[in-house]
Length: 67
Image 1 (tube, rainbow, N blue to C red):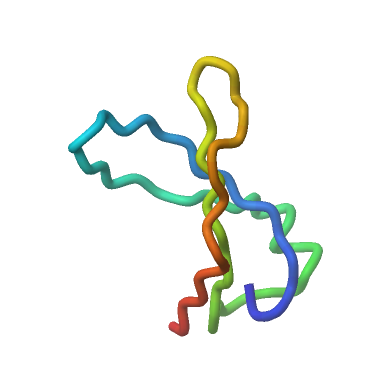
Image 2: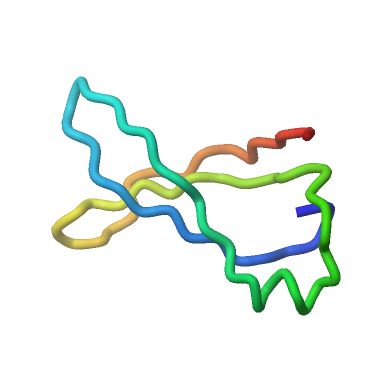
């Protein structure tokens, strides 16, 4: 966020052919350590894991969102 690395959490299961809406959570403690009060941009990637083995299946390219 805003060019500073913070750890976010997003975890959901999606059945084949289906869609899901969910939220990405960022710890307020992580934000407090960075002095971020307003979010101007977010850069992230998604890592898809096998739900049984937690083996990484694929990681997306970086996605940047300007707010």
